[in-house]
Length: 344
Image (cartoon, rainbow, N blue to C red; front, side, top):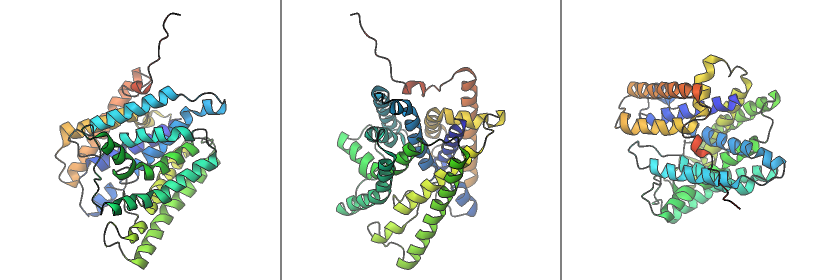
């Protein structure tokens, strides 16, 4: 579905802008520039859940065995690739590790009822942050929230992805599982996209308003361990209102993309192709950051130029690649190798 590809392309562009920087400036233009912060990654994960749901739809509807080998292969490849990419000097928390573990976590849910999926997503959004805070309290806020890499011990990799890292599974399962549920809907229907736009906007605006009111009533948290932190809607705070608001924004963007019926137009093809080769583009932007951009950029203008140049370069590459090949160079690797049978 081209609308999903376009939405995935927007998620990639948002992550490139956020990851490239610069950071820490309070100017109005940079605030606008950083609108994707805490939203683009949630859109990427939401679409990942939809993709897994669509990938397994036929086996679910036909009550056939799940493609275990393909799912586990994809999980292993993304995990090992993400851990290796984290070793590079790009100053980015690579999202592929959590994406891999989310696939593994979701396998038992692929045949679950819609009610179970929504209950799981809601539990992750509400209970996951409480667990995250509890773990932080037990370590006096001293646990390592840095991303895990290939050089870390196995236990550190596991806890870093599930509990303490920049994308803890206990929290980020919410948008992924919600995506699995959304993938079961008929996204081609106009009424479905209308509902996504309405409810996405309600969640995004409502969470932000609720956070502002609660903070005004109970004051800002005095530390990372203060209970008032639960009222925060600050991006990547891992708190419920940020998660609900950011996921609402992702749902809104998805609904808006589904409303557009002209994604097959040649002018839209660069964005669509970028989304179709999202893994290649994501890894490509990390390589560009590590070997070309860093240690910059230092100013907003440099950040806009670096981000824009990276997006244009990746759009050009993915467009040219799709003129000849149906799948991207890294997307091909996601297909599990077929096991040949020996002579009987």
